[in-house]
Image 1 (cartoon, rainbow, N blue to C red):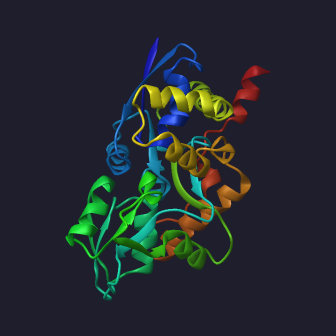
Image 2 (image 1 turned 180 degrees about the vertical axis):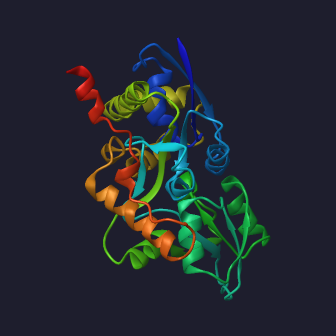
Length: 287
């Protein structure tokens, strides 16, 4: 049996999409998936260092690791009218060079924020600490992500939605690319195709059995939020649009990478469809 490391975040959407495998509902062929959970920016850094075979990443990271990792078509999270939020304390006004807490250098919200606020003074910290840092006055503002966007302290209010920044920069109505997965290119192609198909099936099965799987995750204490918040969060980030990338989502990724290239964050212009696993090989193999 081959052993493949699969790293994902401990956030509700990632756990939900992966645990159909963990609970044995979907099983990879002749392979054991060994899962690791860590916060998304740690996973971004780990992917840069080539630590895991399959890893969840911020979509904004991908151009930096494209030579070593293929982009997977599944387990994706996009915002559609929603997303991370830039928050500040009520009745305060942000100066041009305000101090802000972001969850990571390679996150999508970090990329879009830096384009929109080039004069802001950025500090990076674990996303779980950002809300308190704003409340305490350690920073003037912070970008909340994951479940934090649903419940935050009453002393805070939204300065700006990252979704609105995205729409203005994109110039058209596209879903906001947030997180996806990538796979090490050194894995033989036939195995890579099998692993991607396993993950696609796992996300499909999880979504089809949302109530049962959600209850199991809550009963085992594997989720940070309560049942009501989990249901809302999964509706946002682990849904039918998470199973397999659509043409509209590819267009959104290409727009993100175009913006990053235009503003000097990427050395090359990346087209997302060029960096997928060539799954058409499976048809040739079967013939």
